[in-house]
Image 1 (cartoon, helix red, strand yellow):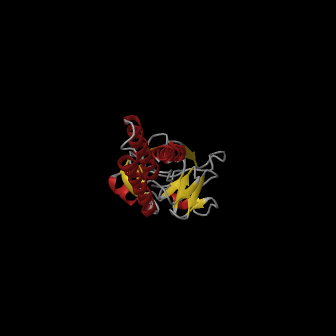
Image 2 (image 1 turned 120 degrees about the horizontal axis):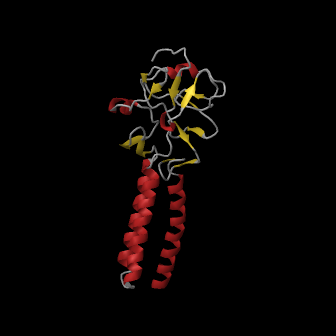
Image 3 (image 1 turned 120 degrees about the vertical axis):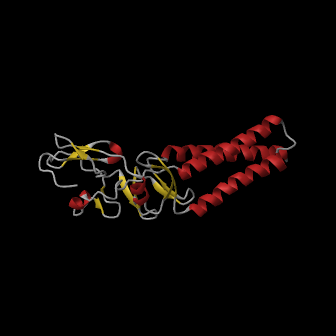
Length: 220
């Protein structure tokens, strides 16, 4: 993409905003993403990234397994063995409860045991697979990021400008929007994309443990 002298604007990726290179009041954080077609007013129309560009996009140590229009929807994090171990334990505990502890109790208790186990496994799986908020240069063919590489807020790994809401996780080696923490038990970071699911999982875990404790005590 060539230089534009007349109030050139570039798209900010998933935010669908624009950044005016000659306007000092422009937002501090943005992401240059697309090669677009120039219109008569010198603005750029974002184009959807191709399959090749998606395949070459930097996502750190995360492996995408399902893509949306511009962003990966589901990813596997670098600590996936911990996630797989934890998920297997949840399912095994549920099966043990159904077969050996609740088999002589009422149908309601059995149904609740199966339902809680399925829900717990599902919300944990969703938390562990959902994109936590990966924030990197969307189009690997876009070279406009080079003009910002001397900015102190520039991440030379992800090729974006960061603000207080964007943090580069060393474990995942990628910038995360709305970063909360890196959770090895979910295999990845907890951020803007999966924070609600994570808190839902924590609440569900309390219900899960209390219910199974009560059922076990009742069976003794």
